Image (cartoon, rainbow, N blue to C red; front, top):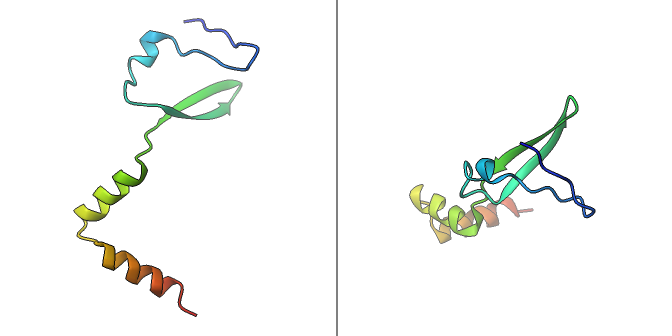
Length: 73
């Protein structure tokens, strides 16, 4: 598939390729052996962190305690 770089250095990912990554908004960009490599990155944001902490049984008080411990003199 062919795509073109615009004057603003933007490249459109062809629809058949983009369709393979429906929930991805961000890509890590690397150059390797003269090739541009895009790797999908799924960012979870704060809500994903809250859900992960809850699944581990870590509550608000645990986080506050950990912060106090880390900031101790």
